[in-house]
Amino acid sequence: MAEGKTSVEKSLEDFDPHAKPPSNNFAFACAILASMTSILLGYDIGVMSGAVIYIKRDLKLSDVQIEILVGIINLFSLIGSCLAGRTSDWIGRRYTIVLAGAIFFAGAILMGFSPNFPFLMFARFIAGIGIGYALMIAPVYTAEVSPASSRGFLTSFPEVFINGGILLGYISNYGFSKLPLEIGWRVMLGIGAIPSVILAVGVLAMPESPRWLVMKGRFSDAIKVLNKTSNSEQEARLRLVEIQAAAGIPENHNDGVVSVNKSDKREGTTTVWKELFLYPTPAVRHIVIAALGIHFFQQASGIDAVVLYSPTIFRKAGLESDTEQLLATVAVGLAKTVFILVATFLLDRVGRRPLLLSSVGGMVISLLTLAVSLTVVDHSHVRKMWAVGLSIASVLSYVATFSIGAGPITWVYSSEIFPLRLRAQGASAGVVVNRVTSGVISMTFLSLSDKISIGGAFFLFGGIAACGWIFFYTLLPETQGKTLEEMEGSFGKFGGKSNTKDSTDHDNGEI
Image (tube, rainbow, N blue to C red; front, side, top):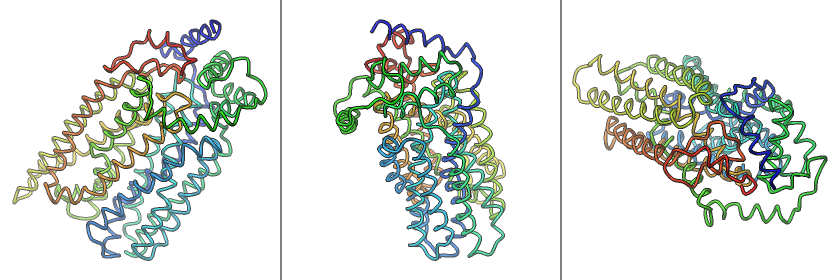
């Protein structure tokens, strides 16, 4: 194995982030197409924030029904997330993306034609399954086709497209708000089927993930994809060696189609969950805690409460008309989109850890400021314009600081830290935590605000975000510039900062 180790050690020079290799346009295009699946979730989040104003009036729903309608899709998406790992290992990452788009298309059409609350709930059940598939597969596929030198940049694309989808949803709210009551909200929801059609066409130009091809023994196909998505032929060969080592496949099996023992594959599939949760190594245990923790704190800090209930928050802050509330909400979408674009260029320059800690620190300050300003507005008998302005500024500051770090890094980090054999199921588990937490927040926010006041709710979110900062500082090591196959060497040593040398010396064949 000395020769194999030499290859791995040589690869670290190739992936040196300071070398600034030329960008790979083919990998860039693949990441764009795969990440378009995230528009589906983003559009649904954005459009529901405004559509519920008119759904409530048209169908005469209570606040509790609105909470359920808005938040239940997060729980429905769990079905898709739980199935996505096994499905993507079975039919491939590429066709799983197609499946996600097809399911959401059906859900969006059904939502657009919903005659009543029960039918609308059924339509959101269908759409939620498609969203669950999309949330899991986009970051996994993008991480697996991206060269290490630009993986952070490319793997942040799903979050970029979620924000783009949210902005489109907000604009749709404003654009169709003047239509008759019974038509406007149905058009807002039904038009979400359009991105699914574009996605189904675009995916035809995408190759399959090279790591999935290797797992299936299709080495010649994997080499072709690696040659296209790497910055050089040498890098492509080194990536292949590392993928084979991670998959436990001998290095000399690197041409044509190799038969992979199916009984071994079945046994491996059944033991993945045991390896993740029942009998993990110290490194895998650390990885699982880091991945699930980053997903939990991303959502528990209240981002979906702000994004889904922006019109309600702005009404509580003092904006009275639908038009004022929807325009302010569009500003939220613009802030999120602009700062997520900034984040994509910082991930591989600044690193995951400092960007995440700076982001969450800004979120804590913004949430506490928002809590104070909303409390002042709530207890004032006259309109205090400074408190209204501070509330709006705090919302914009919160979504901006979230988007520059916690938003994209959650998906980048959780998709890149799992070993190859655990990656699909590990990523699925992260999405499950993400959606459950989001569902709890979005299905309880209005009730929580009634019980402890809207200011109190944001004090609570600020406290959770502060706990998240401590968690990230303590348990999340830096992963910038490391290949996916050597990532495990950074974990197992609690304390946040990883030892690059230790991870370099780690035997990648044991991943």
